Image (cartoon, rainbow, N blue to C red; front, side, top):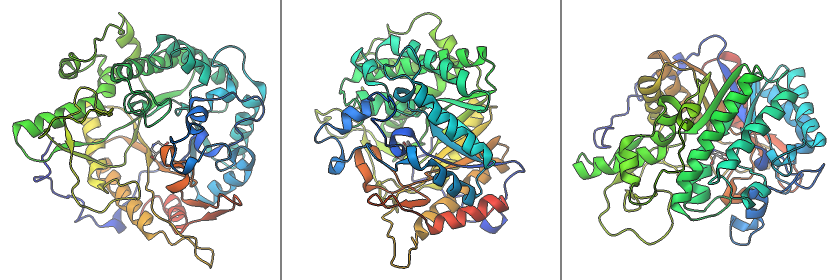
Length: 469
Ligand code: IFM
């Protein structure tokens, strides 16, 4: 943990033209089911918490929903061709649990399974490896009605679903990620409520976090029993720096790092919750939902850890009483988040490639050795489709270039980084921001569903082919 006043950019002297990646490095793009598929009422798909949430007035900017999204459910062959144009070796996508088990339990919906089977076959025909995420936030609504992730049973249901779908796709899909960003599912979903299911119950968020982790551990066990080859999880990690070196600011950074990063990293990779986190949370949450044996289950060996990286948090100790409103920072609501005034993306996230380097090297140093993948990194900008049919997104190209270079610096220092997935293949439904934020390498016209490769996409195709900048 370095105070921001001390942090120097080590990237500035790097000669980008010299940046090369190891032979066999995985280059991919990523999407998620609810963000791209659409077809929410087709072929027996059941409702998810995101259908309910998006259709609740006031939850999503502009009243957008994922009902149609990118219509990837029907247009996936065209999207696979775009991936082939990009020269990617892997496509990371998620399965919609309610398409496979509309009730969140029991019999599989054959039409839903068929869709993913066709998608997998289509990818393999073009030489692109499917990389499956089992859960990217679209919990079947009946499971939320039964208590959602704060209820232990949801973890058991998740492991059953994992085993059942692996049984159908495991012959063709080598890489299985259990969860995407459990921090978002737990804290955005159950603490601040800005994501589905929109509950604002701080203690429930900690129970949700635990049951997500338990679901992961049970799913790893179930997948291994079926002979799954590569099993891992994706977490979103942010360096958390104190704005000054004062003991109070450093303590604020420690608390937020606990709630953001270590709450997942330590159970997964060390088999325990951090003592300081338990102490911080003692006034608000008892951990009596943690049963004997849970942490051993969660601590199951992994074949890889996926890291999603977007920005850094800079914090200071609270200087005024916490506002009485729900936040993500259960028990640390008083901590203030500081803007540094550096360039930011359309999400308002400060652009900080060094943070990626620091995140990868930290995980490697403190929790490794373990193969790592950047399973998401990318940026939303206010793209414009010009009259000549081009999207001149130089800002995205530059963003990616600097982050690729940061990843390469981590590699050069010995981090076992195996691949990099850009978020996202397509502009898509950006959750509470609806369609107002565009992350794609491919522009989507939501009226016509026309796809246009952005300039950043053309540039990325050169990177994947050259395996370097
Ligand atoms: O769009 C999301 C994605 O679903 C999860 N990771 C962050 C992305 C950008 O917000």
